[in-house]
Length: 332
Image 1 (cartoon, helix red, strand yellow):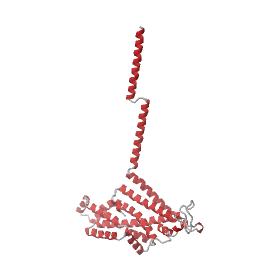
Image 2 (cartoon, helix red, strand yellow; image 1 turned 60 degrees about the vertical axis):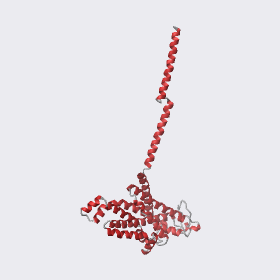
Image 3 (cartoon, rainbow, N blue to C red; image 1 turned 90 degrees about the vertical axis):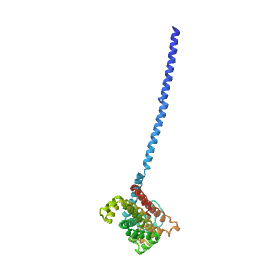
Image 4 (cartoon, rainbow, N blue to C red; image 1 turned 90 degrees about the horizontal axis):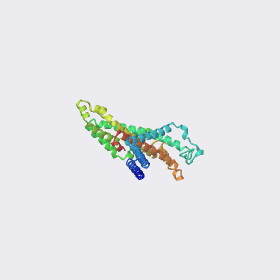
């Protein structure tokens, strides 16, 4: 009897041990141990974080959304510079002989010149003037390109004449024709804007002409011809709406070149008058004082001009990405 009880107790202990082993194996199989559960949770957390990071990176790498972000920043920067320069009072650039040749400081971030004028205020006013000249020149050049491109689509004879005019303007060195036209128009804001407009249209006109030739072979254009519509009406009503994105992006890409060329011919003395604050005049006047160690007279205005030109370039490329105009990069 005693032996039977001991045997049954041993069997019970063995059965308990077997059950413990089975439960441990089952826990390992189904990841029910605390260590494995914690490792699995950490693995899932890391995978979730990687998924969120991958989605965020893909969201940021979207070219259209990136174009919207950079284009908006460029518009804000250009608007702030232009409005600030236009709204500054006239007395902000008056001479003060007591503050001549001061290095950049908190009171004068860009320093002062040989007449005590605040270079920060002069730079803002000069940038506003340059943006105004660039706007007039870019719109004028875009209008010329649009009119000639539409005229090239009316007949083959007009296309040959306009192609010859475009090749003629492109064969003349750009800066030479710009200087000659600025001299003929007598300088000044209107003269500089007209000279830049008359020298910056050929490349954009060539792009518009190529788009018009491509559109002429479209099926709806052929149907309009068969319905008896005139070539001019087809060009204006059916072709022009397709050219609006190209023209808009082309005008924006002309903008930085117009600003740089305005500064260049003003630097040479054929642009704006010295009484008008312009970046070209500021850079031209500062050349005489660089040897005296007054580096800030040319550094800060040149850097500000570079930032504004880069903003227009970014805005044009952003609109090119959003509108899908592939050939607008050729506008130079």
